Image (tube, rainbow, N blue to C red; front, side):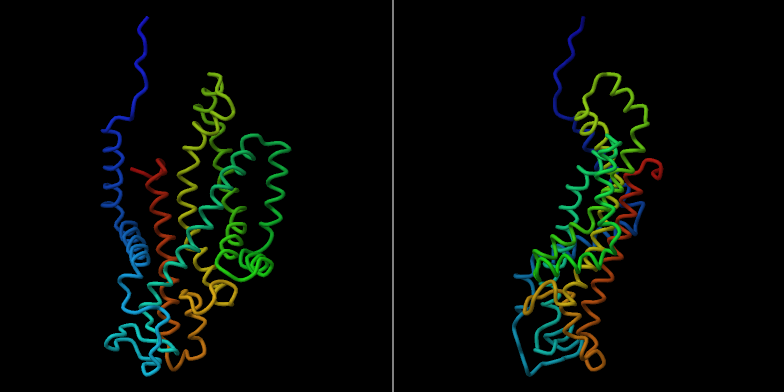
Length: 295
């Protein structure tokens, strides 16, 4: 009888193959590659804002109030307090991206557990979990977020918690649906016949096949959450002045929309563009990870 060799690290050619597939995808899907580059650029600029922004976001110059776009030294203009719009846009990206990514991350971790347990075990466990989530799902996303932030109080922490709770039902449904579709596959039946435990089936067999649709859906949700978070800041329930935030910048410029439209249009356009970019990037990730859509 020949002894099997001990398991070792994954061969290097496997990592090269994955990297090569990613490179092929980026070359083939130019739109997704451009969206990924834009997202990485926004993240990089936001992280480096304390070092590369022309001014501090709270620095005032009352002699330059409502300076227009293209003004020397203030290329995106200034707001009603003479603060540089470009600098506030850079600093505001830190908060807006945090509000976009963190709730999705928290909700994804919770939803993976809830959705996989509900889909795998079914029966009473499935009914209890999904009916509880249906209570949250019955409320419109924005309305439920407003309700939760109103209870928790204004602030970034409250917005993150509220948005995480709001999107848990959506992600849980995606995870549960993916688990139900995978349970009938031959590899799951083979693993059960080989004596795999429930934990092994969930962690080693089902989870890797749930990740692709989950990752694509979570990417799209980041853009949606950024828009909702900006809306909460616009209503005064999110980031509080004088902190820089895109939604707060839109609210501060609404009173002078005709006289100085750039104060509102610049951050508003950034919110819309970033939401669309995440949506397109999610579609590209789905095409990359779904073998039925990959040629």
